Length: 189
Length: 328
Image 1: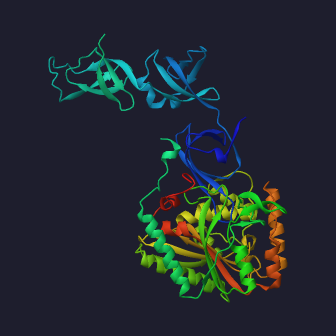
Image 2: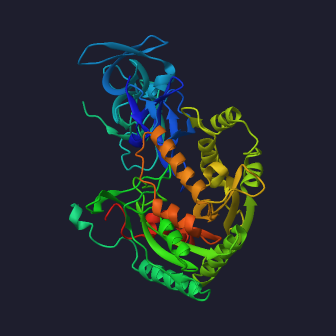
Image 3: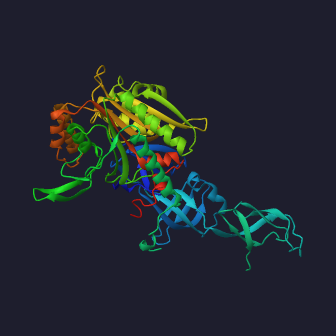
């Protein structure tokens, strides 16, 4: 078990509290002129996403949360769990729906995602910044209309819906920025 | 950017004028009251035993002493002056506290410290408020509201507990409720936590004015160099002044009993040992001065950078310093 002293506190440090992993998002030292010093922190629960405020006595020890970011390949979903594989060790991990959350709509088999592991359990899954996905359903395009202007919703093979220009037809593979959920361009095959 | 490129004074140069103006006004304020400016040693062979303050240590001043300490306040020399017959005095004193570096702390800072013969605690905090009001007016800062309340009233009004009656276990439960995590707190630590974390952030006015609060009659455990309360044995004649929740000044009706002062210093050193901190050489010359006779007086120390910060409506002490620990 590794521990941190409050003097090591900084944003991004992962600590364990009441059995849950937390990320420090703000650390403020409080020191009365003639009194005990404290560290007042805002911390985010990595399982629930909830942010809470706690205060530690300065120089006390806090248990570190054994949290690790690892790049993994998405394999498949069995309807309940999402399965990932560490491409270096070939070790496989199952992520719950809670851990995957919104990321699910970008997940295509074989894509490489950033999986945050805590005690070997995936806590969160970040999709790649850009994904290439096929349009499975959209209104018929106005062929030749490349002047821009209008857009229409398009459903992708993973279930995500993004706005695409009017001229982009069904069956086309497009590139999407997962951070903004925006169409970037067509992918020429 | 390399280290050497951070050579210039941070922040607007008008800060230098504002600080100089503040100093001039302070000197005028005391000149009008016949309080004499003094200058006392920064280095001393003796230490400050305060449990929660760490001193910078350097080479000794003579062959007898291998180490010397940078003062954390000019208090001990001031009391030796008062016992020598100086009369009312003040000093604008550079002081040093190791490891204190936050948005409200710099390891080197300036204390305005002054002593008034024959003043009670109430007389002195009234004078501090007068000084603050005057400086606020000449610096054309936001209007001020003054409030005065006892330590007990403060806890009752903000938290609904009586800090002198509550048991230490119940106090710990209360701290946990307020977000404290860690080992069991002593009574003093728990009250420090509640004061600093649960009360201070709320000590602001809602009407756009600045709120200056005088809190008096602290617990006896926090007496340091203050007299015990003549009626309530669990309290002492100490006050603090807070500006929008920022601790600005700390004052005492001064303890004049040499034996009691010596015992408190010894107690401090024991508490320091328990916390794994160095024991410090007790200032026996101060004890001797008290034994010879310290005139009845009250004294106060006010953080000048914090005062300037509050007057200028800034949030961080570094905003008014130009040179701080990060570019010193």
